[in-house]
Every structure is written in C-alpha cells, then in structure tokens.
Length: 398
Image (cartoon, rainbow, N blue to C red; front, side, top):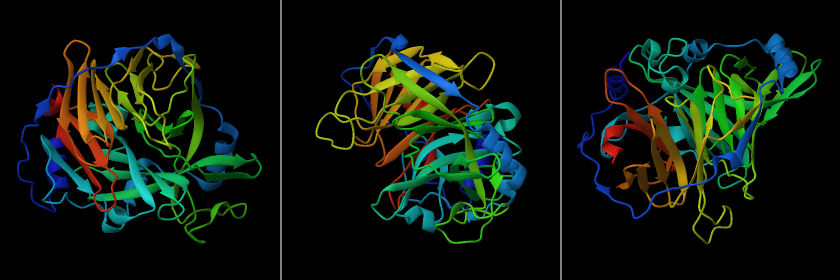
C-alpha cells in the first residue's frame, strides 16, 4: 500500500493542516562535521545471550505474531491538531489523550516497517504497515527511570487507526524457572531491521530484540507486579505482551572517550546503523560537555545482524549540540537538535544547511518509497504535544 493512501487514512479524523506542503526555509550553517578515525570505534555482538531462558519462556507463555498483536490493538491514535504546521508536512498522528498528556511516560525513538522490510510488499511486516515508537517510564512524574516499552501503531488504510503497547523485558532466572525483569533505559533510539529490533542503551550500546518472539502474559495482578508469579502465571504491569531481550551489542573505543548512545537510525542503502550523542557545549550536569560524534556501523554481509566484532566505517566530529535525532541515507545526513530547535542537513560535498524545526524533537527514521516522495518520520516528546509526523525529505536536503 502506498504511503499516500496511509496518510489519507491517518488524517481522516481531522482536516489537513494549512500550509501542508509549504517549503522549509533554510539558512546556511557556518561549519560542518569533520572526519575522525573510524577504526577507533568497534562493536561486539552477542545474539544468543538469553537463548536458554527465552526458549523456556516461549514454552510456558507462547508467542504472539505481530499481526495478532495488532488484531488486539486497544488504543486509538488521533489526528494531528489543525494548528500543527511544519515545512513539507505529509501527515501523522497523536497518541490518545492519556498517552499524549502522561507525565510518567515519554516517547523517544522511532522506526517503521519500511526500515524492517524496505519497499517490498508495500512496506508491510506480517501484513501491516507500522510505525514503532520506543518509550521510557518514570516511577513518578519527574521521578527516576524504571522501565521501557515500545508502541506498535498501524499506519495502513486497510486497518483501524489503532496501536498497542509492548513492555521490553530482560530474561532472568533459570531454564527450569525462567523469569524476566524491567529494562530501565532511556530507549532514546530504535531501529527495526528484518526481524530484529535494536534499542539504544545510552552507556552501553544497543539491546537486541526479536519481533518474532513477542510473549503473551497474564493481565491480572497489580500494576506494580512484574515477572513470574507461579510456574504458569507471569505478570507485566498489566501489559498483555512483553518483548524479551535476546542479546546485546556492546560499544568500545580507543579514542579515550566512550560513546553516549543517545539515538540511532537505520541506513538501508549502506546497510548500517548510525548513532549520535546528546552533549552540551557547556553547563550540563546530566550530559557530557563536549562536541558530539556520529558513528556508522555496518551489518554483516547479506544479513540483518552484526558480526561478532564490527569496526565502524565512518566517524564524524559534529559542530552541533543537544542532538536527539540522526538519520542517514545514500551519503546524506540529518541531525536534529531539540535544544536549538533546528534540523541540520549535511553531505561531505555540499556542506551543511540548517532548518528551523519543532520543539522537543526526538529521533528520525528515513522512509523509502517507490511511487511517492521519500519521507522523514519523527516525533515530539513534550507532554500534551506528542505529534508523530512525516515530512518530505526533499524539503530538508539542502
């Protein structure tokens, strides 16, 4: 199904915003990224870290395919507000009223089934064209991070405008008595490639999940209960589905300064994941005060997994700060600064261009299309203002 048809479905509940295809107004930036030694950055991959525990959990709880999860989607997405406008806007949605205003849960990363499968079969994964958003949860409004989750959102005119939440969990216990626990990470970026979901883990690298291994859980108990309650009963804060971690991608560097994995994105053309860091120019206490980097890591040949050891193929020192979003496609780069409310476009040959952007911006995902313009999907995390939207990438390509 084409992106256009889905956009029409996504906006059926409300009118198109004024200035829908208005051109973005660029201003040329003063300086662009510089090259760093890519060989200083490596990944170590383990996709079998939890095999025994996950096999045991599957035997007890059973799995639910993505299409089954979406058949049981229980939240209504809504239209973008008529007041929302940004250059090149194509469409998008908001979460329901509760999720839009929730001060304990914050959307962060974004990826789509176009990342997972490309343009094949209309960009459908298991029969659905989907937008996937990662979230972190605080233990109270303004409190500490205590867990993370994903939201699967139907973006397809064939299906209702629905979404479903899935808790991310880490397997624990033993093969005889398997269990799972919350994953209290920021989940600042997420990339879906083939059947694998890669979630940024700020101080470590990435955690890996398999979208074929969504587990069914019991929805009884209290909202505080998590994990094994008896040999056959498992709770998950009242979530009906959990996605257990299958492995870990660990980052290392000889540069002397460890990477902060603030956000990630998939580049299908070069078959790689790119990452960047949220840093401050000065004055921050919770984030590094230094120039950020962007690093590209290639997947192993012919598969959607990393080799046991992977060396980066590109490393950049960036002149911009407060970066919450990154995307790359066919040698082009986009960086989003929430603090500056700017979107930066850069290629090594053309140099940088700066665009005005929305407030509280987060991750970026590139959407390939064979019949319509390619898109950039992104979102805002601000309480009461959680717009998830797509713009034509040509409006932001310098």
